[in-house]
Image (cartoon, rainbow, N blue to C red; front, side):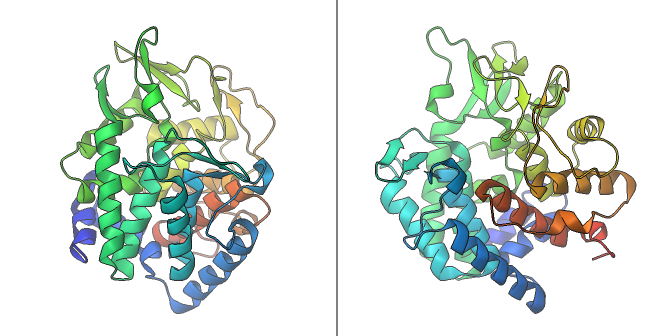
Length: 359
């Protein structure tokens, strides 16, 4: 499977559009950098490692009690690829496999220091990120065992998490989201739609309908009456609305929707219009969560990853390059640093025309 996998991913045009866009999106994770830029990414990952990765490979969130999520292990593995750090990649993977993975190949989503895994429900973005990182690492470092592990995770995720409901093929965030009893809707998290991963999942586990997951996730974003909220309920008629039981906010979950679209070079007009209409048509250095019904701000996003999302969308709309301040990687906040690091890689690979000074 080694070396054939990337070709299979590239020709899965449903994930990233033209093959050239697919190649550019994956290039940073495969080490296809100018040597000087690779040295910079390696240095940045060293800082990230010192701030957020324990010696045993556990990626932790200092701002949230030091907890670890399956998602954080996936982010750490993807960033270790950017840094070209195979030893750390393997430690992160070994912690996830030995401590958080279940017999069904999915992962308990929450690990608490001193207590271990405290919630064995999965969170599907964790599986997507971990499987994708393993597959790309298997290609980059010619390690078939990584690809085999990735294929098992992809197959389990497709089997357990892909469902047809309300006219959509959806990726459930976990088994708890499935309608049953009094629960008459399917709950989804649209920030678990990570286009970069879906071509990988298709290549790894082609018996599952990843293509419909992709196309119907795009359709869901098209069908929203309001801006996307962190959590969405789909009723049996296929009507998506902000989920019952969660605030109707575009916040730290939903903000990843434009980020993941940008990561794959996808221009989604509805999402871009929402960002520009709420955050403004020019760079302000101030982005914020908001109520999806009123657009009213709720506090602010603390970190420049969110500003860089805004700036790249503005660049695509107007041609204005991103401000230099939006590029400074700050290692004081795990979530911001993780998203920012991946987004800077996308800026270099997919949006070089948006880089200050033209790249």
